[in-house]
Image 1 (cartoon, one colour):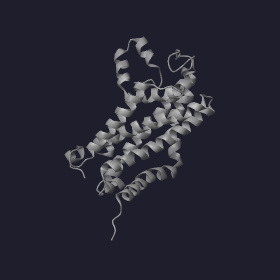
Image 2: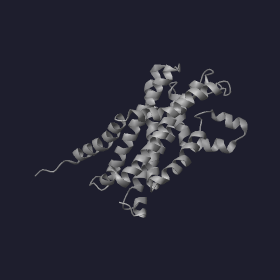
Image 3: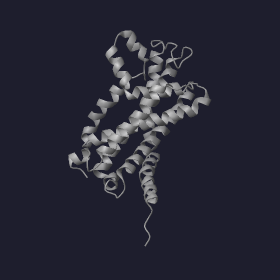
Image 4: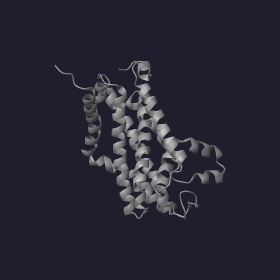
Length: 272
């Protein structure tokens, strides 16, 4: 009797985890609408209300003054990825407690592969939602050179991976679904508001809020936004790309260690 090759086991596991995430999302079209409601509200309402309040200076990557609506797009794309990353974290907690992941975590396959597939599934959903939002932004008159679209998509992919890895790491700490809302509010809103998603960082420097400026500069969400902002104009922010790539590796490594039944937090909590 021949043994099933390891590569086939890996492909089957990937199909089970990633395919399940995508099929579940496609069977629920309302999830796309609910995921885009929040950024659309900011995009339509806040851009109209604050268009004449926030002046955006001619600083890189901009070569001329831009409307506030155009400035907001990278931040709202990152918002989509952030909330989807946290949603993936909730899904992981649920699946670990009573769903499919409870069984998969006991399978004779490295947990690193399973976590990588979970990360891939969350990143795929984030990228899909972000691409839909880009189309909506085009419909509302936001324009950028289409030759920069591949670079923007790559920045979106890497940023979504970072935020999905963050959600994966946080799922280690969240023991019960009841604790999810409080933990997510503690993470989502500080990350989003202490960043250049809604206003340029020089505004903080101009107002003398140095401590907020320092926090924003150390905020990984800031660098997700800036990587996409520069990519929209065909430019590369080397620091932001370095933080995004390094942060992804760190968050995924911590999640991998945390789910290790021999050394991680899973062992300390006495979980499977």
